[in-house]
Image (cartoon, rainbow over all chains, first blue to last red):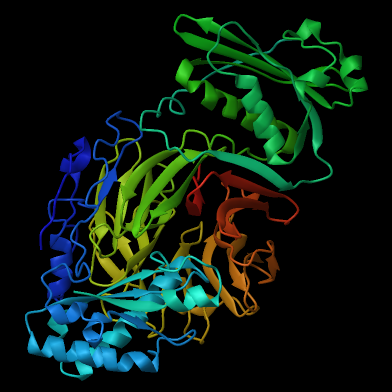
Length: 194
Length: 426
């Protein structure tokens, strides 16, 4: 996974302890992989103090930073970009107010399960998302439920837990910007990020 | 009679070096109270001063909704010293109070003096002298506004405080998220963290020196604490799954957070000294959005254990969990008033999400707003107003409503999505 770090380190970076308290020994491989993206600190963020005048010399970085599964550009085989192949579909949609997958996408999940079974070293992160209604942290929890639903369906078909990572973005990463059911429906989704 | 009390503003001044954010903000009063007090802030005498102190005081008081300030062109005179005030003129102009002042250069510093008079009897109610460097004059102005507000209304002003909020600008599939800290009037807005991945849930420490927030900068969630004065930040929770909804204990030593590392989202207490986490709620449903009661005894949180999200309370040391909201199909994201007597929350009954406030004793909920999508309410440090995020059409606003619902203000930004406001506790 390549990363272009154009990070001009700000003065306070040395004080960071980003390793924090990841003491959980069950931390799964793909989550660790996610953390490694930023192991040297903040590939996707810059910070600034209000008082020391050092400002934000970090600028903007990581614009293409290691987005897993950058839509076929990440060494994925050609079937991922063949529109006739279910592997080209990597967004799963859900029923209204529910973490139940829409029927049309059950076969898409099965195709991904077969691919993951055939490629046991392949990781995928299941990114859960929700619509904008209600409170933001509660929506993070709902997004995680959707990710776990998809994870459960993959595991039921034999995919190893170690191949799966889960993250919920709640309502923070909408793909449809409207404020009605037609947009909300598109935002209640899980993206499979290889 | 001139009675000056000397007051030096030190800590309030001089944290102004980070780059200023482009998003311009203005504040509109969308609903004011009829009994606003007439007050004249006479332009202060100032020779060559770099900053217009009196106009900031004027707009602070006007914006509060509790005062009706007299525009300078309508003033009968522009006195700058006590003996030049002719009180009958101000009475004739319908004013209850008049404020005069002077800004005097004083060897690199500035001395600011002001006096507040009761027009009816000509008595001086306040008189202060302060000194400040040029870049502290805005803070001095807000401090003067706070003193006038407290003298005339009997409760602390909130003009010197700061607000934190999140903005997002989107271009195609790229987005840029900022955690911003600004003065309560929107001035001096500075990004304290910027990321192409989402930032969420800013929460002020009780001493207002640090902010905890959620960052997805590594494409997983982590809870960060950041010291404002230095920018120093630490990742304090980055377990697998959700790391979210940080809430400071009243003594600042702990965070209540939401973690899902053991399966489903539960409330945990994170000791910031030892970094130990202990699980507080153990329900199989979603438990999230903890809020500490100001006395530190209880934690109120959102849970959907009954089907829909409602507020529950648990002793902070652990114990019996009790549901505390019973009206409305949706109650979430609780936040206590500083005196602990009220809880504000996102409240829905049907499809509209509005700001509610609950009397903790009676459990009665009043709905204060009328939006379709109002969220993230929190109290001003004097308990008089609730700051929240709202939306009209495609534009996001920060808004404030008085706890009786009678007064509303809207903080208007020029562009980006703006949300999750939090008023500094001091």
